[in-house]
Image (tube, rainbow, N blue to C red; front, side, top):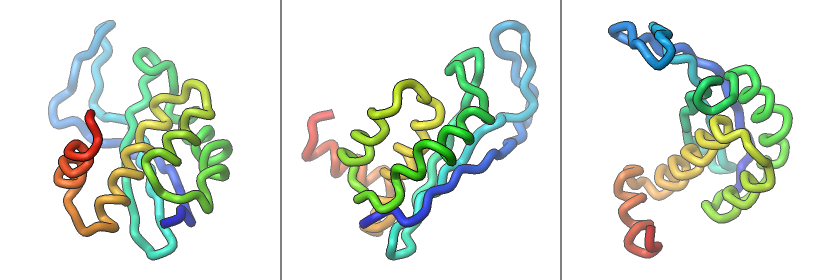
Length: 131
């Protein structure tokens, strides 16, 4: 499986009841990013990231810029495997909130390509790889 397309978009997810976080900030939306990876067979994988300047040191705008302009050009054509994608992600310092949904999308696309729910795929991995 090779990555033929990767995209990141922003999404505002409404929070049912306003949430008070540290510093007295009240959140009514979770301002996140969604990553979608597609392979040559049309399989897709999704991941979600929640950049928070006070927690991760990243803004959503910075994450989207990094993903679309720096990381994704390096992923296209790459084999989809946990080790390979992890190696590519490790080449970039920082950007944790941006890289996390890419990692999630890789696990998701691998499980979908095997027609196995993600929880079972992770269990299978745990059986063969000491986590």
